[in-house]
Image (tube, rainbow, N blue to C red):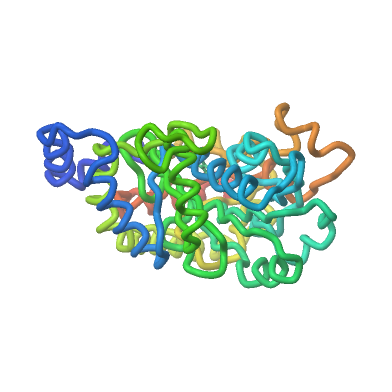
Length: 364
Ligand SMILES: *Cc1c(COP(=O)(O)O)cnc(C)c1O
């Protein structure tokens, strides 16, 4: 059986350091707002080559806090607009709605990414921000997006939840990360971070995540409680040290998949996305007969998942923001994407077993 992602094996590969880190926090008697969080924030800011990192409770909060803070600082109105790709995990757009802003969907390109040359089409007098997503770990066309944003004075927030090690540095105003257990840098629970070079925004996000307070018991803004805890921070510091080499392992597996699938020579039956810089959080293949491929792989002991079966404009909670619009590429991705197993602890034998199972499908 080849698991989609063997989290138990992955985390075991960090032992005994992981347990030692947890024990240090347990023994310290200090569980929130302590030295483990401060240390991880400093390490992750340096890793992203940015000045500030604020640990928060999860990726959705990281996105929401940035938008809420910026909205208040810049005096954006309710229902001002944020451009969001139509194909992503639902959190990207739900954060916009939670911040009291309006998500405006734009269709994705052949990599399932927001493309700079589709932004003009949805630009309006109320557009305030662009929210590109590095979907599947692929770096979005940030140069094009920064150029467009500079021309139209738009705020740029990157959803980097799938792209640790690939997103940043650059000209974006902020990046939002998730440390959900299955991400390339994953905690043993929930966690997230905001990374930015803007001192004012960093301070405001930190306050918003702490009941709107700068100092204890003095609350300047309505805020929330969104904290990364000491245990998760200590775990993340251990795992961060291996992130680059873990990403390199994912890239090696992805190259092997790409080469094998291209040599099968059936692009109508089984295709990969055009190759680009990626942390390969996910390895997607596209096929017009997804259900058949997924059952075939399951029967051969290969576990797969779908990312994602519904594009945003078809989600019941987001439909009202997409009325009367069509997003054909997002539809195509949602209908044909299947994610193959990929992780730093996958063995060569598991990769080859997956490839053999794909060959059996293509030849059948
Ligand atoms: C995982 C993910 C998030 C949300 O992260 P949580 O920590 O689960 O809240 C946001 N955007 C994308 C693209 C994600 O993959």
